[in-house]
Length: 398
Ligand code: ACO
Image (cartoon, rainbow, N blue to C red):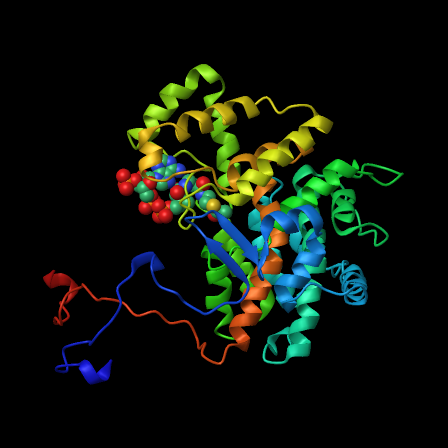
């Protein structure tokens, strides 16, 4: 940059790319998205194959360590995760400080930050063994913290982890168990939640992963880096979108109200939530899998009455010039909320269900950033458009 500076007042050559629409912030070997073709792959494996054959913990291993595990690697991985599911009892005091109606995602953001204070050694982020230890701890503890946020929201006693259960089975037990015996989810619902976890595990340089990388680039510990990522996910244009979809479907209320609603969207009074994506300009492959999954879940729970409104909205939008021209298709959030609601989750909890599996992706991105010798502390430039130099004016002269 200095070489092409013509004089001291010239800042030289600089890329101005608001919202990084066309700027790669890193080189990454984790996730590939081809938005035009509607392709998503983790470490080269198509999302459709992983959703059909894999499990969330296997996918987490793949994202973090680059290859599918052998049987013994996988058993060791599951064993380590399973033995770190408990959280420090003092974390409950943090939970008790929240108002009864505090948003679950706000609690998750705060508690992840709080957890960093329990693990001073996690600040040694340049040590691969330390990184691995805390990656395992975070993946293990996310469901426990999330489930406790849920129980707090409902004013019910916390349920401790049961390490004899699967990752998702244990999570569901901590969420829904009322009394002895332990809660036993139907295999179809346990499987559906596991597949949803796979689909949400990573999505390359989205807003929250970029937040994890940017904060982590200051060598901040992984708990605070993930608190930052969770805060980004909290936003309605990112992880809050499936919550917004459900509210929107409820507000539309009946098939007869859809045309009026669509007119409002086209007049830019509001957005069709769960539609559109910065990268996908084709059908989001995750949405296609989730749409099918919805039918499997509804076979167990009974059909969600909002499904018909969602299907009709999709049908109308995919046929309408406004949406076709702008290449707006359903994204991952359009159908996921319907499934979550049918399983028994309140809308406020949806972003938390996104954050649990995405922790694997955030950690993979965070680790890759730390291992990349080309990465330094994230520090974008700006194009200054403010006043030139001027003299201070005393208050009585303004
Ligand atoms: N409804 C109506 N119009 C839309 C929508 C939508 N959901 N999304 C984009 N558009 C329109 C915009 O008005 C704009 O039209 P214009 O060019 O005539 O002004 C055009 O499409 C491009 O939109 P941008 O906002 O520039 O697209 P961007 O890539 O910045 O936004 C985003 C992507 C935020 C996802 C957007 O599509 C949106 O708001 N969708 C609804 C929220 C949502 O579903 N978010 C979840 C995303 S997936 C995830 O985070 C997991």
